[in-house]
Image 1: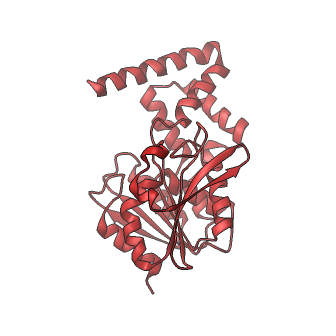
Image 2: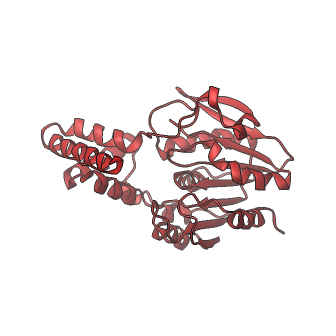
Length: 281
């Protein structure tokens, strides 16, 4: 029943936006982008903070009109920065953090815009990258790890904010092309081609982004550090083909294929391999 209700709501919303696109195109554009960029899950409350986050040193940082939450599990001088994905928060790294602690490293994680305890109602990759840049310049991490859209943002960050701090980059279940995300979104709501063009126009007018050029494969071609791309063959959220696109553009990256981990990509064997990639000699 819940799936049917969600389906009907999605299609009804799509129909409304489609009709609006011919009458009030600007309103249709704003509405389509809003539902594309506003997460419906992933928020946290200070009163019910997950235990793993309670164990960390918490700090709220400011950037322009935004505030964002970050967490630090203190260790030695080797530092790892963890970047979560869509409709998630820093607590998604709990299982992996237990693996990382074996190295004695310092672990840093942050909540994305409109996620966890961070402010805002909208998520977009360029803004998330700005948050990451503040953390990188403050803590100078050696390794950067991102899951899903967090991985896409980490790749975007490394290609647009070159620095001498990050030595290795790990992408887990990450999408590549913005146009693929938009196509999937349009399919979910049954949006017509007119709305799709309005969305493309919105990205260019507000972010100077040409959606067909916003590609992980292109970003990866600019990254010189060592990388690890991990993706599950049966990922039902982000197609395995997305990882292949990134791998083609990034010859200095290892490609790790899993099967059975889905999109969440939680697994001791995977975490052991990532650990070895980071800390192995």
